[in-house]
Image 1 (tube, rainbow, N blue to C red):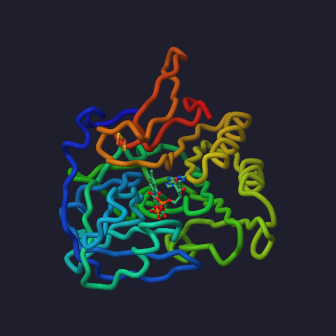
Image 2 (image 1 turned 135 degrees about the vertical axis):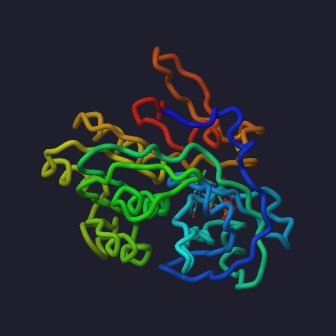
Length: 290
Ligand SMILES: Cc1cc2nc3c(=O)[nH]c(=O)nc-3n(C[C@H](O)[C@H](O)[C@H](O)COP(=O)(O)OP(=O)(O)OC[C@H]3O[C@@H](n4cnc5c(N)ncnc54)[C@H](O)[C@@H]3O)c2cc1C
Ligand code: FES
């Protein structure tokens, strides 16, 4: 995957900031969107990159956690000034984060990782499982020609159609659907308990969408590892290119600790461990040894 900055030095370009929370609002069951002011990070980030985040007033957890860019926030001058992250309350950090109020501070470093390369296809198919929808609003906005990201700002050819296939365990966890629909993304969703949308797995939705679409297309996927492996399999069988954004647990986020490695094949088919934080989190699905 092409990257303008060599992976080994990538984190050298990250910023560290103490930022002030502007909003921390509930979107769905155990799911929140935190917004903080940080114009220099907002100007630099591209879709698919992530930030490491720590709570400034707590030493437990000591290590930061990774969160994908949900989107940048624009000011009246049409310049980005803020960052939105969306998170599911899961363990130590996210339970405390859900209690953070506007005015409180967070330690944030980033933007980190390679992000998604701009794609040049007619139909972009996004597949999200659980909280895996978070890297996609900015990506959809960019590929619909509604905003440019990065510094210098990068260009992408607008795509004709974007479809989101989004699967969660129960309807109460569906978060951000209105954000996608406002952008013009066609959303299909599934729940494992059948409470809303298609009763079943997100791969059922993907197979349906692939059976209808006939023009040039690309799948981008994020979610639990088993789901991404299943999506990679559907993509391979339908001969559709697929990139996945891995959510391997991370400790440093800057390429130092090797806690985030994934087994990846190179162009000769040889396997090697790659650091998800600097050489990912986005990889070609075909290269991952699931
Ligand atoms: C590149 C990247 C982007 C991410 N983006 C988001 C996002 O946008 N929104 C979001 O809610 N989360 C995201 N995550 C996951 C996030 O970093 C945290 O792992 C998660 O929020 C749990 O943190 P916690 O402190 O609340 O739970 P913890 O107390 O750390 O964890 C509780 C349990 O979950 C396990 N665990 C921790 N991290 C993971 C993981 N990544 N995968 C599987 N099991 C894990 C631990 O081993 C433990 O058993 C992302 C992860 C990565 C690597
Ligand atoms: S999280 Fe430390 S090397 Fe990737």
